[in-house]
Image 1: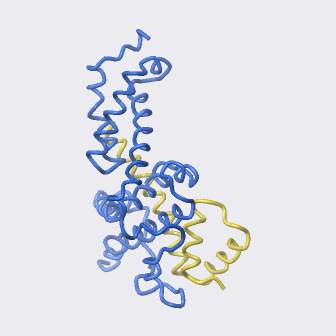
Image 2: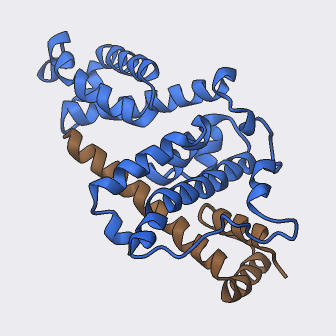
Length: 63
Length: 196
């Protein structure tokens, strides 16, 4: 069973490259039962959205 | 080419914009100043390259982006910029383990649900907190995060540009996400929940 520290790292890595099949399955099972890691997953995707919007916001005010 | 005559005066007009852009990307005025100088110099040397471009500003910004990557690459090799926590190569992200207990579970600072994060993106106060949180990250961690998430580079490009291993890059991104998440929860999303 994947632990939270392993799951969190896999969540982060999964945002940057394709995880292998085994890791993907283990992560999916972990996320099914762990609300902390599910929140970390949602929040990491939100950070991506925020970083993009931050860049757009900055260049808009610079125009 | 004559129709794209570039002279010092035209370049000077764009200088302020380029500098603001570089400071935002590099978060360091000296490095930014240097990158803009390099850009203007390159522009003067390559006037011909401008002809096919839509606007001088777009063209200059394009050159500047390359100069910024050069500056980031140099900065990352500068030992003064290396945070002690960033020294370790590879997977030895020791400090991150303190977020988890000995069984690998999240400790007391583990993630909590955030109420309506999309709404935060519309609020000026949120962006002030966001900025503070990104500034708290170690410099190189913040740089890798910005290259990945704001500029959309993939891991290979970041590795090549900063001369670090893919594993090291992944650790830095992981650290940035944990750090930003934690800081935003402490200073924004957690506060909101208390106020309700």
